[in-house]
Image 1 (spheres, each protein chain N blue to C red):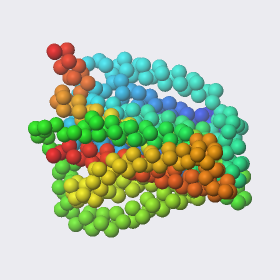
Image 2 (image 1 turned 30 degrees about the horizontal axis):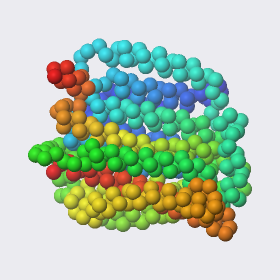
Image 3 (image 1 turned 90 degrees about the horizontal axis):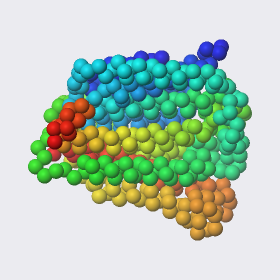
Image 4 (image 1 turned 60 degrees about the horizontal axis):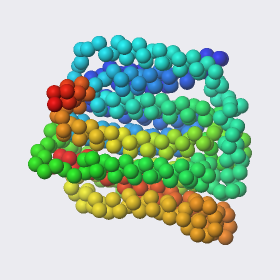
Length: 117
Length: 320
C-alpha cells in the first residue's frame, strides 16, 4: 500500500523531469515552451493530487455529503491554468519576434549570429 | 497518469513540431480527465477549454509563422542534460518518501483554512460551489492579481507583435494556411461550425452565470466564449470575424473587465467595508456576497474572453 500511495507523486516527478529535460536539452524555442508547459501541468497535477481526499466528492455543497476534497488547491490551479495560457501566448509572441529578427528559432544558431556581430 | 508520462516522452523525442503540438493537446485532455477523477471539476473544465482548445491553436499559429521541423543537433548536450535530470528526479523521489499517502484525510494540507471554507462558506457566502466562493470572495485579492496578469500578458503580446512591420512580406506559408484553405472548402465543417457556434456562445453564458451553483465561472466562460469566435475565424475568415469584434472593442473590454473587478472592490470600500468585501454591498450579507461574486466573475469573464480574442487575432493578423 505504501507503494500505491506514492505512485502519483512519482509520475509527477517523471513528468516534471521530462519537461525539464526538454527545456535544457533542446535548442528549438517552441519545443522549449512545450517543455515548460509539461512542467507546468506536472505542478498542477501535484496540487490537485494533494487536494484529493479518499471518499470525498467535488467541493460543491449538497445535502447529505460529509467529505469534500480540498477546494483551495483547485482555486489556485484554476486561475494558474488561465494565467499559464496567457504567459504561453506571450512566450510564443516573443518566438515570433525572434524569428523576425534572426530568421531562426534554434537557440544555438541565434547565439552563433550574436557572436558574429 | 501512466498515459500522460508516455505522451510526455513522445513529446520529448518527436522532432516534428506539428506532431508535438497535437500530442500536447492530447496531453492536456488527459490531464483534464485526471482532474475529474481527482474531484477537481472546475479545474478540469478550465484545462479542457484552455489546454485542448486555445493553447493548441496558438501553438499552431506560431508554427505557421516560424517552422514546423526541429533541427537535429549533433553535439553531446543531451547526455549531461539527461544526467542532470535523472539526478534531480532521484532527489525529488527521495523527497516524496516523506509525503502523506494519496487521499489521506489527515494530511497537513487539509488542516489549515480549508475546513473552515467548507464548513462556513455555506452560511457566510451562501452559494453551493465552494471553489467559486473561495475564488471570488475569500481570496478575491489573488484572483484580482491573476486578472491583472492576464491583462498584462495580452498587452505584452500586443506590444511585441501587435504592430506589423512595414514591408513585412511573410505569409502563412504552411500548415495553418493550407489547413484553413481546406477548411473553407469543407461543407461539413462549415455547416457544423455554423450550427455549433451559437450553442458555444450560449453555453459560455450559462457557465458564466451558473458558476455559483455548479462547476464554472468567469475564467472558463471567458475561454469558451473566445473559442466560439476563434472557431469562426479559423473556418471562415479572420477579417470577417474581426468585423464582428473590432480590435478597439476587445481592447476596451479587456480593460473594462479589470476595472469592473477593481471597481466592485472600491464600492465595497465606499460603503464602509474592506476592499473586495462584498458583504456590505447589500442589506443582507449573503445577498451582497452573491451580487459581488456575480459582478466580479463577470469582470473576470470579460477580461479573459477579450484577452484570448486579442491574442488570437494578433497572431492571426501576422499573415498580412
